[in-house]
Length: 95
Image (cartoon, rainbow, N blue to C red; front, top):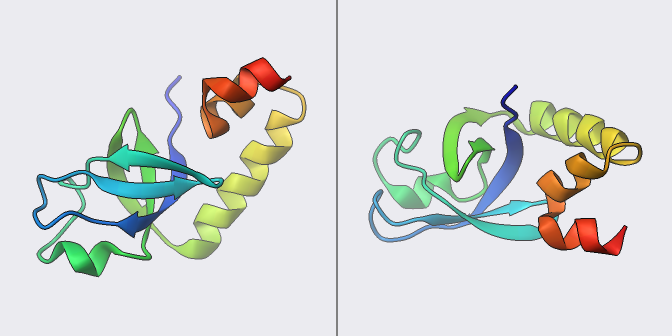
């Protein structure tokens, strides 16, 4: 099973081929936005994207993104792997 996780674009490069910075639960990750960016990269700042293996796969609306994050956070309370997925491997070491 493949999971995508919502994150909000907080920084972009000058070109669509530059990685953007996406905030996922307070953790900033480099993400390729080339698949979802239409035109100016600056227009992506503040948008929510569904991220899978370092690529933004789609743009999602904020309500959908927050509902998905809430569900993942609830799962993280019982599944160690979900916390690692959300917060990175350092979360696994803190559990």
